[in-house]
Amino acid sequence: MPLKNLARLATSPSPRGVERSSASIKAAKISGDFMGSTKWNETAMLVIDMQNDFILPDSSVHVADGLAIVPSVIQAVSVARERGIFVIWVVREHDRWGRDVELFRRHFYADGKGPATKTSKGAELVDGLSIEGGDYKLVKMRFSAFLGTHLHSLLQNSGIKNLVVVGVQTPNCIRQTVFDAVSLDYQHVSVISDATAAATPEIHFANMRDMKNIGVATPTLQEWCSSDP
Image (cartoon, rainbow, N blue to C red; front, side):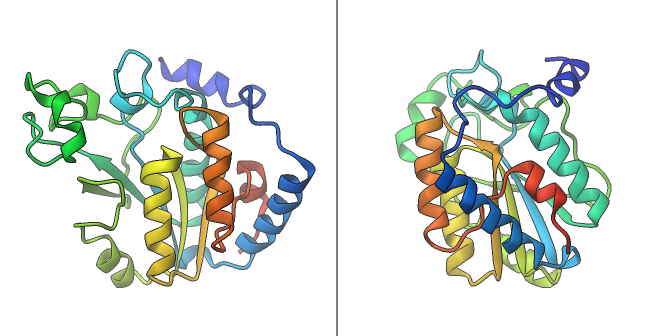
């Protein structure tokens, strides 16, 4: 999708299926206050798996609601940079034969053309997103951005105490990364509710509730952009 179309989508209404109950709206207000207590220079944004193979609908492994959040992720990254937040692009870049992927996914690589293989178009960031100076790219091989990577040491060495997470998909890479961050005692962990996505809104919000129940903040993009350090 051309960048000009994505920019136009950024001003469009929220995608179908993301209406929230009064209880979730109340929770979001609490989440906004939670994020308002953080310091941006001690915060990193993890942008997870916003790659062509996981976002574009012509891919066999795309996340159904992934394309709809691209404008929100673009805006979240822009605001993060303005605030001086450390932006980390967490991506998958696999061996073409799948020798480094989860066992249950290896059948995708039988012909040497599996998703998000190194140097492939599918492994590139979706149109509208790009790595800029001061950002950092981290390659992971499993759901959690912490498992088998140097993410924790990178964050510790950078003085990071707080995390904001956007990307796909909520029940897998988002959830496992967030649960690991909580286990590692990061002070404030937030998931921007409308800058993350799953296969369906039902799956998305069920997992958002689970993360909220372990102390994770779940502001909307608007609430997060309006919060103060």
